[in-house]
Length: 357
Image (cartoon, rainbow, N blue to C red; front, side, top):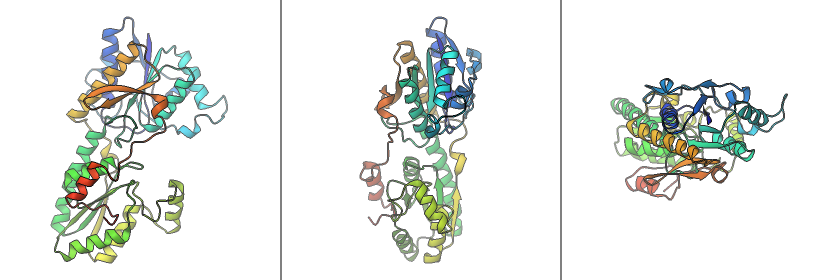
């Protein structure tokens, strides 16, 4: 049996742990197993590139950040667009067959899973493994890489809070999360911030400034605001992403965080600063939770391949590892419920969301 593994989309902690677990299981349990790594995600598959992954190649990578296979982004919208030599999808299918693969493991997020579903529908044996620091893949309680990102973001918020306290500042910290606010919500609660702004709950600049003015008048010496990069103003909620970018450019704004910081400083009179965590949230060693989760997910994916169960993606449900059909989850997102327990708990202990409640 010949297996291929690729890592696609943004990197995160735990990718190497999954690769290691898949390889260890298959080499120990499947007779004459051969595993190849496909470099740079779907880009490598489009080009028809691969290299042998031997047991010794995955030694010592459990705690290593990033991915030994490298990764890249291949927009889903371009997969079926006609190009010279055929579409990217047709090239991947042809190369899957040329490589003689019996199964392809695709480690990635929502976009990766949509492309994996396409490959599956075209007759390729595919098994997905859910990876993203955004935790937004539908059908699974958690994705690997998320918990490490929460730990990193929480630590960063804690450290920035010491500067906010020392200088009596309002600090806006921008975290990753374009469509979903799980990372900002969880790390914000864990760090004890005063306000959380996420894509699922459009905020009112007037309410944000009013709340912060109240804190200044009440004698609060500093304020921490956690802002997801995809947070939207209530006046922008009806727009699509491209339309929001255009409207903001027309107003001469860079990011929602920078714009909001200027507005807050103007209305409150308080010294206001911003900090963008950026790729810090993706990198580094996976925490113990993600090492265990990644190992379990990788091993389970390998077991599914051994059993001939294809066209699925691994998932976490409660304390169990299970799977979903790729066709059922592709193109769907798991978003924060504004009325869910986590948000209501946060509001109950005084964290504001800029929505007037």
